[in-house]
Image (cartoon, rainbow, N blue to C red; front, side, top):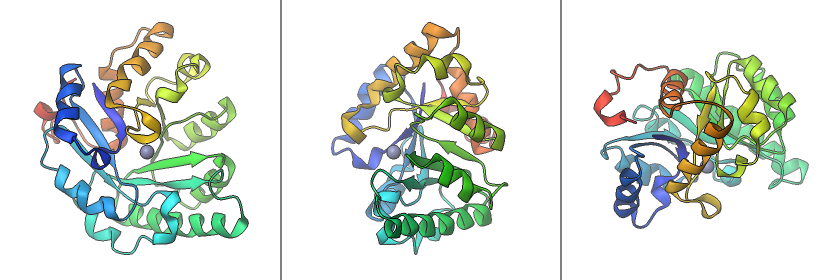
Length: 238
Ligand SMILES: [Zn+2]
């Protein structure tokens, strides 16, 4: 199994945590950056088998600015996580600040031809509007918990939706989302989740649809625009 969104640089006991996950059949992770400090820490993870990197600046840290991010992009498979969080940013000035940093990152994604991992909380309309200037940039909306209408808007753009442990009760999404555009994730260790929380998400989905974990793996590789063998198939076995 492949965890399509987590933050491995935030674990103190990473090798033990990864070993535990491997024993449960989880062998690959797309590890995303959060603040500036995480860029260097993330880069060190690149040598761990099965680890793919996304480098970017989370909207919670927008005030740190994304200067220097460019340097970390050639080694990464995607840019992220970035996005908008209007629950966190209540006033217009803060929201504008998040948008500015997001636009800069989307321009980088375009220049370096990287797909983008998006964080979106209470901001689907605003984020879709920002994306209008970037029709060529492919996105994954991680931890998707939006409405069916939100989902449709992202799918029309050609994007992917990733469901995590907080979507366990969303059988509406699991039943109706097109199976070639969905992903699963833990977002661990955010909000107390663990890398082992991937299995319950897969199982919840399997209760409403007969699907195999390999589905999410091939979807992630399609999102990343790379073939399994280009990335070294050995590292990405389910
Ligand atoms: Zn995250």
